[in-house]
Image (cartoon, rainbow, N blue to C red):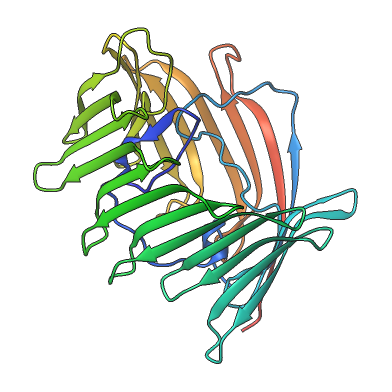
Length: 336
């Protein structure tokens, strides 16, 4: 099973991106990693003095996606941010529903009450988004879907109405993404990725403004077959990518202009079958030597959400596991 698109760093592409099976629509609470009828969450994060830097690649230390949040009974988020010295900083979300209770519009305001975002919601998800900065129009985007509810095209425009980007996605009925193409501000194709489920061949290519290839690679059956970029090229989008090979294993490639690629492997163990919370993450080189690691301890409630966790990290410089972060979380639930 291939995973969805994730961008871990500026010049990183997750190779498993195109051939993933889209999941059914999830609520905001579920997207934030919660189970059950969550009403509100309040978190407290305590960092130690241990120095830790996430390497470029798959995430090892999972962040708290929503520090202080509130949700409707249906799991829609109504408040998102953090409390600092007793004051809330973040977003206040107003939802508009139709006669059947379905959310049709989402208005997001900042702490000062200025409109920051307006989303129009259709039967498959967001169809239009307007962004504001300090209450003034900044940009707009539009999303369309195929007959099965998969995103098929997205368009983006700047504040003056000029188109600045377009993306096209071709998806099989079962949710497997077969192609993703992205165009830039001048209508030029900037990158394209394709996948053939029968041969399990995947191609990724980036282009400059004249249409000339900047970088390209091919993966077959989850293994890198070839990589190319011009000599004297600087690090660029696409020369770092990861392949989800299943069973909690990810293979990460860092490629260079001479066509060679450095391979490392990351293995995840999880607290629960739905893989919401990791127990351990170990990053090893191609010879099996441990490079980085993160380990987790949890206390969980009856809904299998954690209310307390410790995050321990390891690097060769540390020598031993060191406590990096201690997190506390108060969770209130809607009564049914």
